[in-house]
Image (cartoon, rainbow, N blue to C red):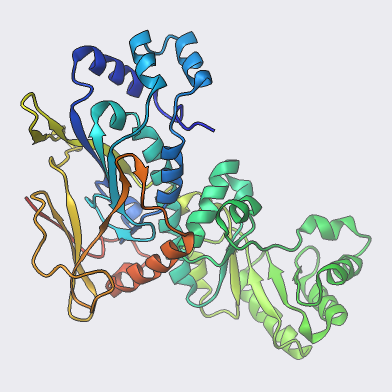
Length: 436
């Protein structure tokens, strides 16, 4: 399926005017960055790059797309002719998925002609703004949970394809599994799920429902025990499955208080290994509040797929350099009040102290590498380069498995100072230092 119409009308009218004005084929450099981190967060997480590369591969104007544009008089015939042969032939560099970022971090750089690069603005921002927001929220939840696993289960609270992207981003940031089968099919995200209240209500009794579930899925299944009376349901579940009952799920009430009562009851019944899973509108703050409770895992839905109050990463796509009449690349920058940008193509590095803890994000416009840059995977300390080649001459060269991004995120967060894991509103964990 073509991704070419996942764009805004004005991108095509800009293209038409640039073609007519004779400047469409000037070389141009666009960058994606955030002026600030939303909601006073300490760091952001890069996610969606893999989906973006897929969208770039499919960014083609076929007969149906061209017919739509012609019938609706979006652009003129010369522009349609250009679009009929559109292929991105430029280069793309960016932070790898799972990497942490900060205000001003050039997380994506697109180099090509103005004509081919300007058309990518909306599809790039729609993917990165969504996925980075979800991944950033998920990362906070994972750290609030500590060693306890979290399952993503928010598919019913968002757009159907946004649910798939959210499950992917959550897994990248450390969630253990998702309830979304399409995420498992497309991206290999582990999936999990047992039963809802409707299954219990379908049967003539809770006991009959539990027996049917155990017969089908085995004693290691997870029983939802708050349809009627929690204590009675726990007693019935252990009676039917024995001490090997896998888990019980709590989805309502004062979760901490109920968890203490259920843990005591399970131990009294000899079900010492039966785990307690809690759900019900959890976010990073409620997860942190349950840290001392006898809870073994969490299921997060609505808060995850809405970015836990920050559904966008506030990323922008700005022209930072363009070719002049002599063919020389010149920095350009927006100077409007409240929305300034920095001109020139950026290069990014992270400075680490001798123990490997991040101290600053170094962004240079000169293209010079700071002293002390070390190879990836080398000893702790020094300066670590952050950008990788993703597309070369229009060919995708930076695709990687999702598991690689998941591992990168673990390492990237681990190198941040302890303040990064604070949930309270505050300043970014490390400063962004520009060397111009």
